[in-house]
Length: 198
Image (cartoon, rainbow, N blue to C red):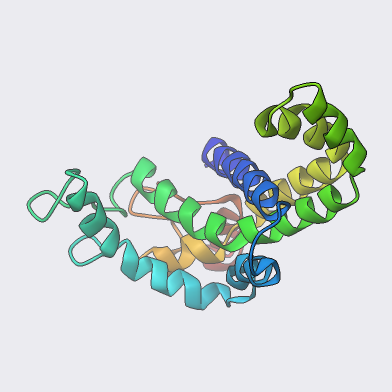
């Protein structure tokens, strides 16, 4: 589970950085976009996880319907999101990323707002595009916040409990799937300590 949690955390922070970069530009209804990005964070974890559990349902889930439109799977061969390790971690990572990308993006955006504008103007005069400015100026200048979010995401990955627990149809067992495909460290601690009373 640890490599899957690490990959999920890296994707989450990369997407948050890209979202923050977009929000750092002049946009129409800028405040509404920023509030909208934070809305998943204020949604209760149980409510969002239950919605995603239905979304990733094998027979009637919208994830399989969308993939069927793209020619992947479909009604004849739907993906069972709870049957394998890769599918289950994609579903759980989607739930977790949906919740936390906006939060991390606003942390990055706050750090980006404190970066001096004249550095970007000088880089633009020297011919640096927006992509190069992001990786050569922004990321190094907000490095303390990036380190902070890496630490928070690592802690969050180690504490990951609710999403995989509610994703499991047999949540009472706390096994993280039939063969422990998506059992997290927190679930293992819960199972050994409270279920097995060991």
